Length: 367
Ligand SMILES: NC(=O)c1ccc[n+]([C@@H]2O[C@H](COP(=O)([O-])OP(=O)(O)OC[C@H]3O[C@@H](n4cnc5c(N)ncnc54)[C@H](O)[C@@H]3O)[C@@H](O)[C@H]2O)c1
Ligand SMILES: O=P(O)(O)OC[C@H](O)CO
Image 1 (cartoon, rainbow, N blue to C red):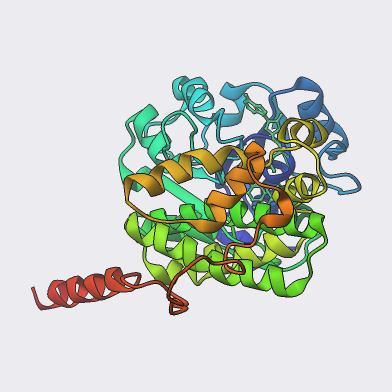
Image 2 (cartoon, rainbow, N blue to C red):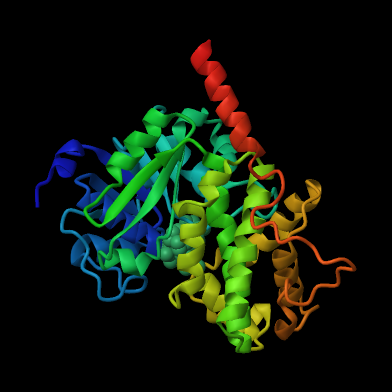
C-alpha cells in the first residue's frame, strides 16, 4: 500500500543490527513505513531464513515478514548506505557490536538504540555506551522506547513509541522513518528519561512476575505498579530526566504493557522466580533476553551513589540473591515506619526539573 508516509521514506536506506524478536519486528515496522531495510543477523541461518523465506521462526513464529525486507550476516552489506542504524542487540553485547560495526559506519549516520538495559560493568545507559565507544556527537545518538511487546507489533496490533534525540530535528527524522500504519512514533529530546523508562520498567515487571508466581492478586500488583512508577520517576529525575517523560509512553505506558503481558520476558522470569526457581534455573529456562535481571545490580549501584532508596528494586535483588522469600516481596504492605509516611504519589523534588526547564525555556525566548 502506498501512503504519504511510504513516500516520505522512499529511498531511505536503514539498517537494523540484531535479528531477535525486537530487531526483526522493528525491521518490519521500518519496511511498512516505506524504508529500504536490511537486517543483520549474527547467525547465517537466521539471515538466510529471513532473506529467502521471509520468516524468523525462532523469534517470531507464524509471522510473515515483508517481501522487501533484506537480511545478511555481513555487517558491511547491512550498513552500506544506511543513514539510520537501529541497534537491537542485548545490552551486555552492545559495546562489542558497536566496535564491530565501526569500520563500516558512514560518519554522518545516526545510531538509534532499541535496547532496554544498562551495561553491568560500567552502569552506563546505552546512549552513554554509544558515545563512549564511538565518540559520537549527541546529535548522532537516538533512542526509541515505549510499550512495544514485539509479537503484538509483528501482528500489526496498534501501539506507539517515542523517538528521542538531543536534537529535535534528528528525533523527527528517526520518528518519520519508524512510523508505520500500526506504529505511531512521537518525539522528545529527553534521551535520559526515554532510556531509563525502558530500563526501570523491567525491574518493576520482575517484581510483578514474582508476586504473580507467589499467587498474590491484583491489589498487590496495583500497589507495586503505582509505587514502581514513583520509584522510576525519582531515579530518572535524579539523573536529569523530565518527569513528564516517565508519565508517557516510554515510562508508564511501557510499565503497564510489561507488567500486564504474559509475553513479557521480564514478567515471565519474575514469575518463575516467584514459583521457586533459582536465578540460574530461570536463566536456563528463558530462551530470550530478560534485561531486567542484569540491570538490577547496576541500577541499585547508581541509586546508592545518588542516595536514592528504591524499595521495590532492592527487594527484587534480595529475592534474586535468595536473601528474601518471594512471598515477602511487597515493600509498601509491610512497612516498619515508626510514624506513618505520606503517600507522595510523585516524590518530592521530582518536578523541580520541569520548572527549571520551563524557566530556561522562558529565558531562552527572552534572550
Ligand atoms: N522483544 C521485545 O518485545 C522488545 C521490545 C522492545 C525492546 N526490546 C529490547 O531489545 C533488545 C533485544 O531484545 P530482543 O527481544 O530482540 O531479544 P531476543 O532474545 O529476542 O534476541 C536477542 C538477539 O540478540 C542476538 N545476540 C545474542 N548475542 C549477541 C551478540 N554477542 N552479538 C550480537 N547479537 C547477539 C541473538 O542472536 C538474538 O538475535 C533488548 O534490550 C530488549 O529489552 C525488546
Ligand atoms: O519482553 P520484555 O519484558 O523484555 O519487554 C518487552 C518490551 O520492552 C515491552 O515494551
